[in-house]
Amino acid sequence: MAVGPITNDAGCRMEARAMVQRRPGEALSLEYMPPGVPSAGEVLIRIEACGVCRTDLHVVDDELPGIVTPIVPGHEIVGRVESVGGGVEWPTAGSRVGVPWLGSTCQVCGYCRSGRENLCDAAEFTGYTRPGGFATHVVARAAYCIALPTHREAVALAPLLCAGLIGWRALRRAGDARRLGLYGFGASAHIVAQVAIAQGREVLAFTRDGDAAGQEFARSLGVGWAGSSLDDPPVPLDAAIVFAPDGSLVPRALRQLAKGGTVVCAGIHMSTIPAFDYRWLWEERSIASIANLTRDDARTFFASDESAGVVTTTRAYPLERANEALDDLRHGRIRGAAVLVP
Ligand SMILES: [Zn+2]
Ligand SMILES: [Zn+2]
Image (cartoon, rainbow, N blue to C red; front, side, top):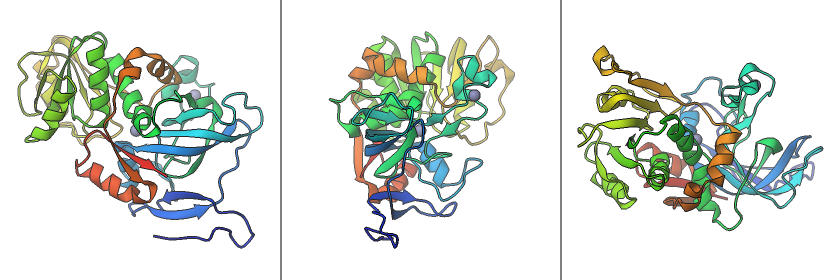
């Protein structure tokens, strides 16, 4: 672990810390630096907590295109604005904000102009193409910050910034499905299950084969049926959301759908989907993916009663132990969500 000086040779205060990946595939290391300076349209945020998402694993494991090191991962940021750049009306200094995966969009491409900024041709993403939240400070685009409640604990809120928002978008994509299957019961599913149950849906959870504790965890959140992803559920599903990055789950979930049902793939990366018979897709079943999020997803989610009622299960780690948190996530040792606290 690198320990830097409090001031550098130029006498500049190195009071910010970050967990940085210097080269692709390497472990993160602690570095000291001056806090960033917000440019026009940006804010400097002092981070209270940052969740650890499966996408961070795909970043540090070099599984996504276009990664440029050095990189600071993390896109489930909860913090307070410390200073603002030119032209920023909101948030103001002291505001409690969240910084999600969608870090910036162009607002002029066809996608941006048709309400689909999540697909923007020139989008930037927090902790991927913009600085991330495995740090004490981050500079973010003001217009992409999310207003957060001030009374909720930062650690409890952090997983809502991606696991919650991506889950919310996936749930919207599932339409009015009454019986909903969740494949992979990690950070996102444990939030979506609570939201879907609050909406009056019936939720069925599919875990890794033999993960009795994971199934028990799902039941403790009000899930009606929990079993192995190899099992047939007692009833057909109107929709299934696949959170696990395992392509073999897609045809498996498809086979459990009622006519007209949809499998929604919610991850950014997945192993190859095996071939399957057309009859499993026949009768107007469909397979969809969701990508990123829009600011409208964030607004509607945080304004909803369902999000206010979500109780997240978290394991907090000091910032310096980010590698351990990533490793625990990689090996399925986290119940709920891992969160880093600087
Ligand atoms: Zn755009
Ligand atoms: Zn994420």
